[in-house]
Length: 159
Image (tube, rainbow, N blue to C red; front, side):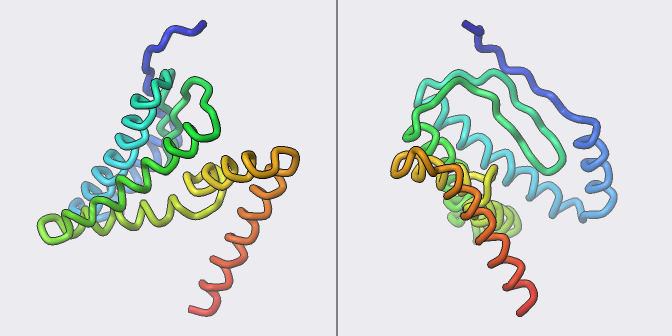
């Protein structure tokens, strides 16, 4: 059995993306986005800890964070996937005191709830589909992703 020890891996693409982001975005927005992302991932980590799921590695890539951890049941994965967006949406409490942070956190929370795999909403959809129809859950996940993409593209074209 693998012994839990957290390793942080930052890809070259992640470094380049970070450098370009620093050059392009205003500092206040960049700091608010980074804190919102950190809070989001901390909620995932807290849920993993509460479910007693060991965390092996944390990969930081281009606009994404991937947490490598032990195996989970459908319910545990659903709860751990839900924890990030829920924590992000709870940041509405800071709207009056830290409006930029609260808006960034809420935007991240809503975006992550989209039923597109590998976003949190897509992972939750796959957990529900696996529970309801184990034989066809992959088809449900793929259809959910495609329907969401068509919906988002349609909204963009209308707007």
